[in-house]
Length: 376
Ligand SMILES: *Cc1c(COP(=O)(O)O)cnc(C)c1O
Image 1 (cartoon, protein in one colour):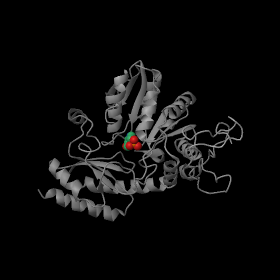
Image 2 (spheres, rainbow, N blue to C red):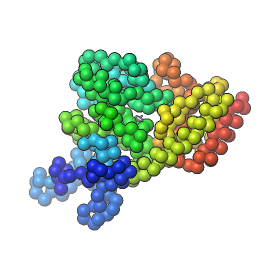
Image 3 (cartoon, protein in one colour):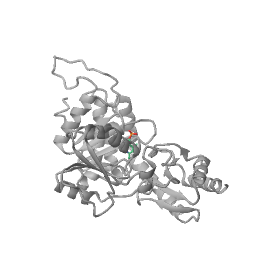
Image 4 (cartoon, rainbow, N blue to C red):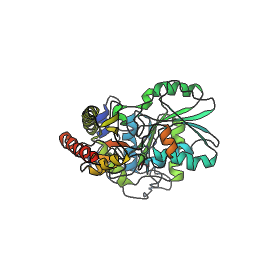
């Protein structure tokens, strides 16, 4: 069974839930095990020198291959590649660019993305320009190699018109990458909107259980996929088979979890919008992420996030459990204060990752935090 000529286990008619459970994951061929096994091995016995498709687990591992095929199927991509973290996937996409390349990037991207671009890759002569990708007048300059989009953005949850930006980017010969971590393929499939590449931090919704760090790249562009596969093996930032197994296990409930995340987030947004002690609510209309600004100062916001019990004060997002955080001090602290101010990221902004606990319990938890925040 060579990877190159094996047909992926996928029926094009399958919907997103069936893909999450079955794509790339047929029963195992030796025992019929329904769940893809953890192939916890570094190397493979070869029947004849060089005549075996499985050589070494940095290059290929059957558990990883199953996950890669499942993730590709969810985004409607021909190729999937998994990495040891979301940032390792991002690093691979940038590393694949030629020296001196110009990248146009959203001005409200994940803090770690901003840090990798400005503090590391800019040292190697790559040029990054940060722009408001939600601006319909956005111009992609001639000579741009790559456009980096996050939609919705983090933590302001602003959305960009992926289709319109892809048209403008392609007109100047630029490729478009979308970090689809927040939306997930359940709510948004960027390749169908004209993007060339999708990446995810699988750490978040795709795994969904806050127990793995991982990332992936999905594309139907054969040349880019070959370049990323070369780098996956040559650089070696690969996930182990156990982590791949856990992400695959989490993936099987993705569609059901996302429905519940969204239903509870929508209910909480409606409730927050009706409160006199809330200055502003950010929500793109779909998904499980919500951010809002409390009336009052940073101390009030700090009292708020310390007072919740079910909403755990923690970085990250997308797990079954609810999380709460202060981006300016936590996830986005690596973005300079003046840049945060320029993009409207208030120091008192509170971000919620709405989990799938009972909604009434979540609301009661937030109710208690509003009371704590009001006690100066
Ligand atoms: C978490 C995150 C990343 C980075 O992924 P890691 O798995 O933490 O390396 C990138 N983009 C977004 C939108 C994220 O939320």
